[in-house]
Length: 569
Image (tube, rainbow, N blue to C red; front, side, top):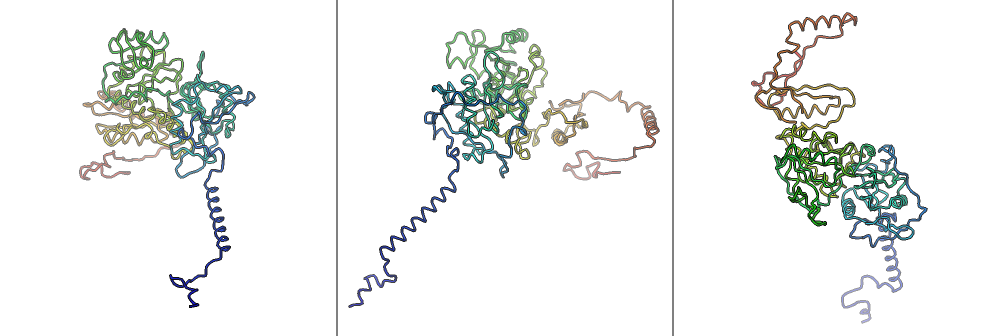
């Protein structure tokens, strides 16, 4: 029938078929809209800066693949460095801004092959393994950003860890042409081996404008306190030799010296100490009967006896760390790894991370002129304190020295704490290892030696044998800003007080105290009356007050407490 033309075998057609030209039009329109949406999304989320497209990881870009950059002879050179720089004068904290995580963002410049006009590289070694590890650690951390517009701190991919491998002028020119250099503002450089012969400066000789320097050999003359960061000289043995942690306690040797290139005057003094104290002191040197090479670096000798290094360091309670041509020595890292207490003899040396680490808990610092008295000084340290220091030394290494990652992250955290001080790590977080505890309370006998900003009060704490309560009281009192001194009177004559702070003699008796003199009260009253007559009135008021001891807070039955209440009488 005629009607069959309007129906198919599948049933009636509900919608008339679209004409071909209309179908092509709608398909084209849909495609245009789709492409527009895709382009908008790419523009929204794609980095808006050429600099930010160069994500830094060695896997994505090696030195050989990096673009070649030639430095004209006429390239500008930064100023040598402003010794007056501080965070409030040479660092733009507003660039860091506020963020909920209170964490700075660090941008790493993309790698470049830097050469002079004739094609000679500015560094003889290029990118070292250590610096590569450092940059990789930063790029893998929460500090890192690949968006240069969000960055608070900029780290060049130019390796200046070892000044010996650098061409000073050309390296400075390479820094000056960095896109965000701005006289070094908010830029961070890492250097572990500063200076060179003959004077060996204690800070990097490369002119660097206002850049922050994380340096491995600062002295008090070159260190800008609160601006620069003193870092350790990384020991390559840390990656190659694994020393198992050893329990604190007495060791085979009392003092050990393992450095091979120390000044002859220092070696002469050490040899005299060896003659006086015999087997208690082991004095090692380079092995003259071994061929030079990687294996000889791990050996030390005393006469004809050969020792494995750094394993031998674990056989001594104290290990000497003397200054060499440079103040910073990799030996310090080796000693800490061995759990040996470092004895540092390097006048004016700024110890690594001393801004946050309390080095008196893990080391003994002795003036160089006191080297002949070293044995006597160390013998005066109680055994219990030596064990605490051994444990602390090893923990310092594990937490802050063990790898380039640990060094880099510690450096960035210190800078982060300066910028966000309200969220900064506390003294306890920086210095208290998890295992160093007295029961449930951290030992406060190694309180930071920070002088009071103004004259304050002296707190006197009387105790008998309640160690945990004593430590709690000391810890809380030490938080008072106006505290100048804290004195603990130990009243238990049958038990020695905890080792570490200064206590009154337990055997002493008050037989000559001022208050025992019967005329004392009379003389005191006369003095007060004289004062009142001169002053014209009696300013003092008679007040009686009773404060119960810590016992009132303890969980004891009320009937066992002598003073269940507290307050005025």
